[in-house]
Image (cartoon, rainbow, N blue to C red):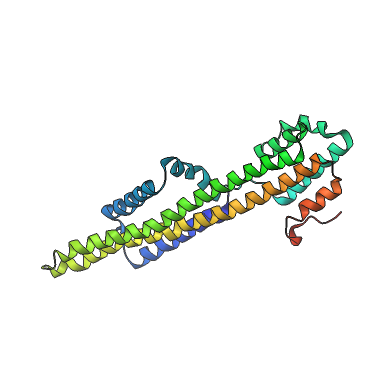
Length: 253
């Protein structure tokens, strides 16, 4: 669980709601027609803009904003040092029994290709394709969430225009102008809140998660290729260490 995402959402909404409560009634900001215009309108525009399959896939991708499942770079280095030392002592086939115990599909596939005796160039092409499609999926998810963040304020403005038109039709009664104006502006408020407190921040978090996962997979691919070439474990460690910042690198024992 990514506590930063949860704390950020709770904190931002909590402060907004707290500010509303201290200055008036929360019920003033509840308006069902405005919810329908912003929520339904935003969803409708997204359905027009993207295929349904892509929209449904966002649910799985969006979970990455709340759950971080990737290993840390130091854990990847430690894991590959174990694999490299074992392969050097007992041969590459000694890795076959541990492949079934690996949860990471990408790592399991790479090691299986290595044990099967594929050439390093062929292994690299296959794994690079996997990484490329991973980036595409993550990019699509972040793009759709960004689109939600773009369309929500726009639908809020449309709702406000609708409210203003209805208000101007009843100018004969001055007492209704204030309440009507407030209701008209609620849709803009809904759109701004959804965009800036949920959709755009989550899109930003997904982009960061994607970069982190691609880095880990690049390290995994580098380690697999080095093992397939029979390189010295010390050289493998140096190659993998070069992927992370100096301050994060494991200290020599």
